[in-house]
Structures are given as structure tokens and as C-alpha cells.
Amino acid sequence: MNLKKRILAIANTIFFVGLVGLPFFWMVATSLKSGLESFDPRVIIPSSLNWKSYTTVLFELNFAKYFLNSTYVIIPAILLTIGLGILSGYAITRLRFRGKAHVSTLLVTTYAIPPILLVIPLYIVASWVGGINNLNFLIVIYVARLLPFAIYLFMSYFKTLPEEVEDAARIDGCSRIQTIWHVIIPLSLPAVISITIYTFMIGWNEFLFASIFLREQNFTLTVGLHHLFTSIHSSWNLAMAGAVIVMVPVLIVFLLLEKYLIRGLTAGALKG
Amino acid sequence: MNLGKKGQAKLAWLFLIPTLLFVFSVMLFPLGYNFWAAFHKVTIETIGENLPWVGSQNFSEALKGEFWGALFVNIVFPLGTATLSLILGLGGALLVNERFKGRGSLRSFFLFPYIVPVVSTAILWGILLDPGMGLVNSILQKTGLTHGTTCWLSESPVALFSLIFFTSWRYFPFMMLFILAALQTIPESLYDAAKIDRAGMWNRFRHVTLPSIKVPLAIIFFIRFLWEFCKYADPYLLTGGSGGTMNIPILIREQAFHMPLRFGLGAATAVILAIPLIFFTWIYLKKVVRI
Image 1 (cartoon, helix red, strand yellow):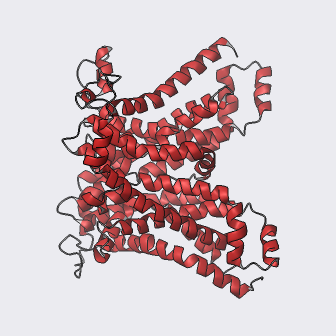
Image 2 (tube, chains in turn red, yellow; image 1 turned 60 degrees about the vertical axis):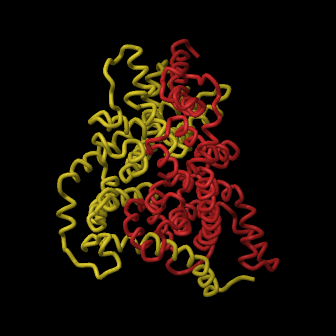
Image 3 (cartoon, rainbow over the protein chains, first blue to last red; image 1 turned 90 degrees about the horizontal axis):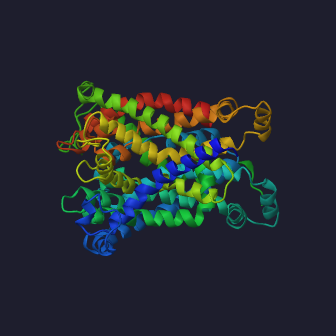
């Protein structure tokens, strides 16, 4: 490597590491400052680590409750998405029936519908069926939003599995359901994991529907954090502690299961 | 047991029905209802009653004043974000495409802005760019680059640039991953040939790298544009639509969910937004997904 190239590479590295690293450093550092320090940009490293902002946010500002609400929504949403996604993906790639092309086109197309076009009619529907301020209604919306994408990914994965493995199982007397359970799912475990992570990240991040449908006690974390930041009383150490709390579950999942995720990310040209 | 033709079809529909129910009730029906509501007077008082037909009144109102500013943002913001995130993504991709120790971890690290929930990063940039006590203004003043305070998030036209910067920061890792995948398909022999021709770094980039990844670059530029076109959360959380950053999605939310809750008007604006969107999505599905 010649000198010019090396200098350019180092400059490039410093630029990107700073661009990504500095903001996140500031987030964590600010969360550990005292309330007064958090408003002073000259304080780079907090004079003493103030972990109290985290307990304040969790227990006095309701984040523990919001955390539970987010979990309450995300777990059934993921399970339903994965279960129905496998069944539908299987039906489209492996079973012969009339109208198959239309169904798969319909599903790919619906994923392209942006949520902003759905929020007004869904709000009205919610007012009919008691869906306002109702976490269960949010689960239904999330499943419908996530399903087409999950099906798309499952379809592309199932296409790579040779049909022979299934034939063998069926000759042994397995029914279709048994074949899916004993053969298809174990073989597609990497896809199941990556789609699980993916749906988790999208669902955990969701803001628009949650902010419109939910009221204070039922807030999910994303809405709770926005509420905290925009309320007058909150100092920045609390806001940043909240931001870290929202971020940490995602980062843990990402760092543990990254190798499954990259596949999903690049396969998923579809995600916003 | 092998199923006959009929049995297969039956099973297929059995597997698909729950999915189709979800898709119908949460996507297709609401979409149709939105279209219907756009032609009716729907407010918080009239919900649940027989809604009066108002013809094109919602549309003529939707096309007034605020709409044109929002449309301008709706074009500049997606174009700006697609461009800047593409440039940053290219830079990042070229960086982690080199072989060096720790490049795997560096790549993971670069994905953080994209992975972390947007609420967290939007309020993070909210405090960084705060006019009075934010780090950015403080650094600029200390280094003497500016003297006054810049209201990064509430002053036109600066706020629009800040918004574009923020979303480009957030989405450059997405671009980086795709460009990286494209870079890795370029055969080494092309570079060897360029080296024999004694092509410099810049010329190799211009004549070998860039032409080889032209198509993927165009595709992700388009995808980014398309997604930013209807983006709500990122701009709303960063600026709340102030300082000339209100795009059409934020406008729709204001019309429908701020007093006096004019759902019909918001629905009409949504229909207007859907027109170019259908066109773009059609191109996307035909040319990119190739259904």
C-alpha cells in the first residue's frame, strides 16, 4: 500500500468512527451526568457516574411499565408472524393451487403500503371495535405489517430447500403438517432466527401507530421516550438514559445474532 | 401420503386464510375506507353516523396553502437523503471492503445508526443540535467557526439540511451493506488489469469500481428515495415538522389528529400522496423486485 492510499484510508476510518461513535458516546455519557451537568456541553465526561438517572427513568417515569407493554406487544406479534409466515410461505412455494401468482403478488404489494396511508382508517376502525388505547389491537396491526415481509423472506428461503427431503419424509408417512414441523422448520432455522430478529427490530422501533393509538398508561417504550423528551420537566440525563434503555435490547440481540441478521438485511431490500 | 390436486389446493388455502384475513382487515379494507372517507365529511363528531358526502371539498381544501410547502419538502428530503446516504454508504463500504484486522467489528459498529430505534437517535441528535446547550453549537463557537447560535432544528432552511443529515446518518449503513455486497462481486482480475495499466487510485475507482456497481447504486438510490417519500417517524421525531421540514405524512397527521380532528381532510391528502407513490411502487415492483 502506498503512502497516499494509507493516509486516505486512515482519514476515512477516523471520519466514520467519529461519525458513528461520537453521538453514541455522547448519549451514554450524558445519561450518566447529573441533571445540571447534562445541560452543559463543556462537560464531556461526567464528574461522577450518576446511575440514578436510570432508576428514575425506570421506576418514577414509568419506563418499567412501558418496557412490559412493548414486550407484551412484541412477543405475540413475532410468534404469529413467524407461524403464519411459515404456513403461507410454504403454501406459496410448495403447494399447487389456482390463483397462486395473484396471492404472492398481493402479498409483496401490500408490504409496499406505507403506514401513513393506513393510520386514519385504522383509527376509525379502532374506534368501532374498541381498539383505541388497546395493546391487543396494536398486536394485530404489527402482525399484518410484518407478515408480508416475513412471507417474502420465507418464500425465498424455502425455494433453496430441495424438494427431495420432503418427499422422503412423506414416504415415511408424515402428513404435510408433520413434514413442516419435523423437516422444513429445522432446516430453515437460520431463516426463522433472522426473521425473528428482524420482526423484533421493526416492531420494537415502531412509533407511528403506537403514538396515535395509545394513551399514557399503555405507552410502549418508543412513545414513552418521546413523551419523556418532550415534557418540560425532563433533563437530558433522563432523556438519554431513556434512549439507552430503548436501545439496549436491540443492541444485545444484534450483537449476539448478527450473523443471522446481515443475511436478512441484504435480502430485505424491502425494509424502510 | 401424497395429496391430490384438490387436497393440495385445500391445504394451501387453509394455510393462507389467516394471513389473508390479517392483510385484508388491516391493509386492504382500511385502504379502501381511506379512499371512501376522502369524499365524506369525517370528523370526531360524525364518526359512527351516516357520513355526509362532500364530493371533492376535502381535496380542494387539501390542495391549499400548506400542501405545496409539504410537497416541496417531500421531494427535497427524499432526494437529499438518498444522495447523501449513498455517498456516505459508498465511503463506508470502500473502507470496510479493504482487508485489515477488525474490519468485521468495524462493519458491525457502523450498522449502529441503522439498528438503534429511531426514537433514541432522534432525541440524541435533538440534544446535540440544541441551539443553546447542544454540543455542535458549542464546538462551532469554541473553534470560532460561528459566533451566533444556529437553530439547527427550527430555522428554515437549516432545519431541512439537518433533517437530511440525520436521516443520511441513520441510513448510510443500509446503503453500505448493499454497496459492500456489490463491491464483492467485482472480479479481482479487473483491478489487476488496471494496475498493469498503471491506473492510479482515483482512476481505478472511476473506471473499474464505479461502472461495475452502477446498477446496484441506482437501485438502492431509488429504494431509499421511495422509503423516504412516505417517512413519518424520522422527521417528526427530529423536528416535529418545524423550520420548514413538514412533509406530507406529518401534514396528514396534523390534519387528522390535531384539533379539530378532520379525518376526511387527512384522508384526502393521503389519497393525493398515494398517486405518485403508486407510480413509484409500480416501477419498483416491475424493475427491482420483478414480480
